Length: 348
Image 1 (cartoon, one colour):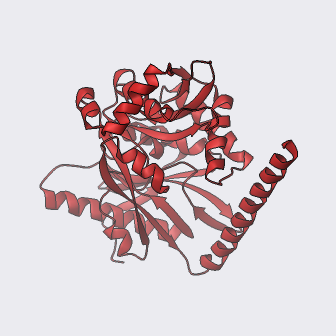
Image 2 (cartoon, one colour; image 1 turned 90 degrees about the vertical axis):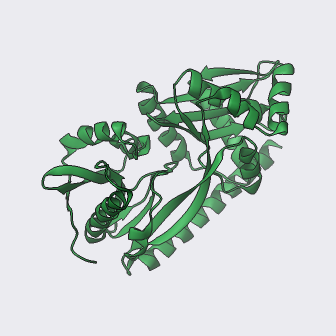
């Protein structure tokens, strides 16, 4: 790696509020870059500032753990976007690209010297993963759908015929949408949905959601929406998180035993209406999905398909250790499934 053009250094803890304020105004930053989101998971948080002649040109926020003397940078659960943020903008396109590459390269030089393993998603607005690829990182690509909410009449017309039909039928059968902060009620829906895909959660996940939801709700940056059927039963719900530019469909759940086939279409439509009419948000991000059937469902809402990158790097000694972590995680997941199966058998 050539000598970095920019100087990088850690921001002191007392300046984390400054970073959060800059992210709030940034075109590239998201709520997930802000330290109050990262700190809600109870991990260590570093913010690396990138400077040119004393000017704060960009930076990167990291959430990490110290394991066996190693600094392990990994995104917290349900954190879709992190990575470098560039504050300095303007100029011709080639100059902007050069600026972004130089800042990213300087940050990469810093993190590979001071941390032992780094895995981080990149911002949705960060479309250039070359500096990472050129400096030994592996680059993975995923996709999400984003809907522009500037004109809700147009959004409605862009839905496919099946989504519009389900939304209308949901209203006709007496389904209603309401705002809530009852996370316990939502957790039942979430667990039910995951079980339908043979997935199970550790108890720590519920505590993490409570923490960040409490922090963001206090800042008017998160809300739970739920669908209630004519019998008064809550059959579907979703947690929305948003920042100054975009809302994120971060978590959802449905009780398939009682929900009609129209519940989720109506829920998503009401989520978009809430974002536009109540929160004043310009874009709605479905936060992707690795489940093919869910991706097809999201596709029917007419959003733009946008790629998003995730990068990973580690010192040579980290890979055998990482394989051990993955093995332990797999064993833990199998144990959770066995416990769930045993409990279900006893109930039966």
